[in-house]
Length: 283
Image 1 (spheres, rainbow, N blue to C red):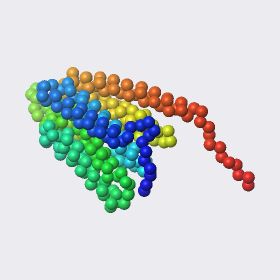
Image 2 (image 1 turned 135 degrees about the horizontal axis):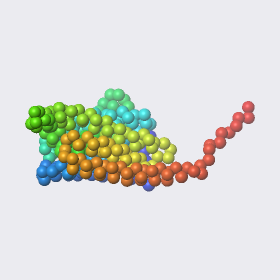
Image 3 (image 1 turned 90 degrees about the vertical axis):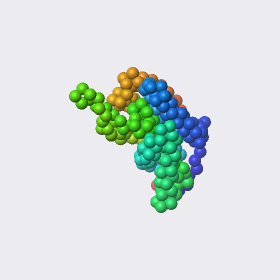
Image 4 (image 1 turned 135 degrees about the vertical axis):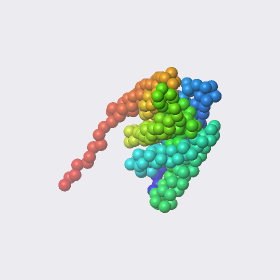
């Protein structure tokens, strides 16, 4: 299966989007470690911003992969990204400061293996399949790690598995009250996967523009971030959770208004378009 892939006119090349998304995501997720260093939870919102940076990268990757004629594969690509990513994310959370980098590396290895299987065993034969699934797995791991750090206040295994509950007026440790023990990770999985898939799914077509597609992805990412901020009230202090919620709402409002403006711009470009006239048969 072959097709010519070109960057959208006036757009940013995919490799640049990948670098910006990768670096931005890692920096933002690492900033949540300030919670540990400073004994606070106020920096938890950086995890959500890191997840959104990764989502923008992943949206560009999905567009690149699905331009080979597998538009119906957008949902499956998104789910595969997070199914691979959760492996890398969970395996890496036991390594402290190395967690974000190791999550990226482990998930990328899993994605590369799946890409090889897709191309050489399932015979999909898509030139960018291995690279794209490698990228998407890395994206999935960073999004899950970012949202988890935002909800729990950190990205270590202890932060994600340690919760407390009150028994006879005494606070006791309870695994089932933690982010992973309470199955909240499954919710974060879906919030990330939907945000990753929707941008290109909603915008694809003859008038698809890169800036509009990526802006919609960012807007969906902030919608998911709002939900993660609400979830965080169960795990971190009220002040930190409120701060996360306010930043999420502001980010969503900005990206929504920008997406609306870009949609009006692209709709106006079609105002004077004429219908395709069919040639009448003389028979």
